[in-house]
Image (tube, rainbow, N blue to C red):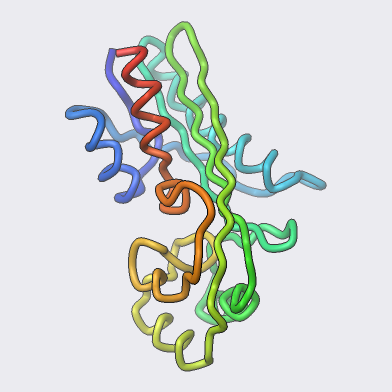
Length: 184
């Protein structure tokens, strides 16, 4: 069986390489719109499942890993920013606050399904306007849930985390590795 990652994320690819030497990357093209009255937990779990399921349709005899990450502040999903102004607004809201990062991983094999969702509390320092503007100038915020990447310059904003660091990055590699050990 071949392992297939249903994501084009370079971070997920890099982390999966720690566990599996050879795998395919087949990004899933799905509608990522939040459904009406959908909770952040339901949303992230549905996205991970849908990403895997789309790829399983073409590779039913392989192992497909779908993953999704979202940032949540007071039950509001802070998605990928649509603009620098949007990112600036999100970072101002996260400043000095605790938010959650939800990452769900869905692993489909020909005979079994494994799904786990991690919820990590992330506490930000109070951010000054200059901090935010300097960060936006890096461009790192683009295409990142919550408008920041903890594995890069966004780490400078983080006061404390409670939970799995790699789930914040977007791929709970420890859990994935344990599942793959059982099935490969």
